[in-house]
Image (tube, rainbow over all chains, first blue to last red; front, side, top):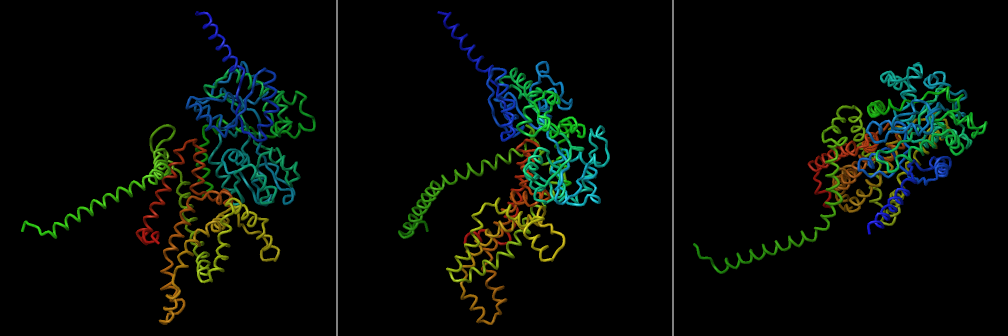
Length: 339
Length: 298
């Protein structure tokens, strides 16, 4: 009498563990970015690990906070902006990553954290309209130099990265950037303010402004600029002093399939999948070993922001610094804009 | 002294019955208005109360942190003053532009007035977003206005009409104009033309007749329209966001920003509460000055 029951219980237990252990849910940003991730990362990982990778979309850290705080965590891996990861880690929203499973070799130390790891790079670069500007600014100092490079400018309406830019323009060496000299940075932004025609809000808007000739020079994201240039827009940019920022991966605290999540993340940041992603979207792999895989065609390599020759011209943004100071800077930024 | 006449007794009885009747009627009206009251309670009072309660919660702790922030950073004061000044200015522009339109429509024969009214209402049917982007195309550096002005040689350098306060006010005025014209037109239409003619017969100049007769009679419509425009302006989001170039920050934009920055409804709620109090204060002021019951009773 007891035996069958035990057996069924065992079978049920085995079945449920089998069902849950073989599945991992990844939440990302939807659109062309997630479509690319799906092709380059999620589908190959499912195949290689013999599991199911379920996909979900999120809209930011607030979603994860809600799940973790209500104790109803549905996602195993989440893709966020690196500063959000830094904030989330500070709030204790993530599991510790298991670096005995995840191999972080080839990834910049700033992008390897106890609770999160970088996954792609995007870069904020100096760009210009080629119709109205003959010789474009080759550094942030040039961008700030309104005498030799006359014209209307546009910066993003956020302190992130803009403060770094201002300090570089003011002559701070990249290695001395952090911790940011905030007063100096704001003073330098104030200096350029009269020449800023627009503070841009969305990535789409930034490209529109540059394309339409609404402004002459802009600090914008390389991926979108590259797409516009491929579309024959009269825009050019340089990777000189580009500021690399990342998207990151993390495991929400209490994720149902934590262990499998680690294995999946290990795959997502592996040189192979990192290399494959570049064929679907023009974001840079965080893992520089991607360039050694031979999976990225020669002619495509030099166009990627983390291609070694481009990488050495750029500076990696310190997400941790922003995780700590972001809100304070945002308020100060708004006060500055309003004046 | 103590004994009442039959007549008096009848009176008392009648009064009692009347009073009972009145009570019955009150209960019936109360009963009939219950569903409406319940809807207002569920859709308005509870959410606003919740908003109010949330504004005292920051990072899971109860306190005044969300309000303290508004004092600590100078941005908040200038955001509130920008919001009020922009709203006032747009309201003024709407009056200046809208009054003649409403006046003219009021004088036209009904059929022509209907056609004129259509011109006021049709833009009203187009999405605010579309109209705002249209203004961006018209006003921007390489937009129609600048191209035309440079083309005829009036200016050498393009004027800065968009991505700033100028663009925001132009766009908002366009969006808001019907809100002023429509209530004003309704009032103007009902002003008896004979009154103006009478004033003229009594020897008043047309200007005097307008000032002493027409203007006071149109006041309720004008105040209702202005109030509508002003209060809608206070909560504007789309137009300043697109035409303001990041420079013009109004309260609604800061609410959205705060929810994003602090991941906390409380940070946005506190701003909402202050804005609501400002609106109440304005209503009270207008009521004291002009008598809202008189305006809305019409």
